Image (cartoon, helix red, strand yellow):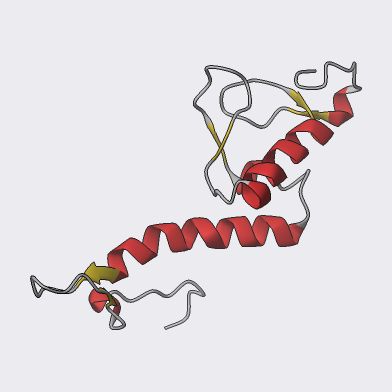
Length: 114
């Protein structure tokens, strides 16, 4: 479809983006891995020019290895939690970053166990 321009069977088409753009599975996989690995980013967007739709790990489960999905999902989680835990030292002459290891009183129970 898009990116490589090759004609692909429907089984080789990635059609999971919320924007509706369709891509060859090999090309979209390469796009995502490049963003995650080479560009060191966790925000992956649709490669269609002028489209600002994000692509999520869950949308890519059929085209990416489980380990890539796990690491990408984990990185997204940390990107949300870490800013809550890191703060600047309150003293004017100190610019050190501190970590609230008490997690601000948050109870993070991802396993569903009490």
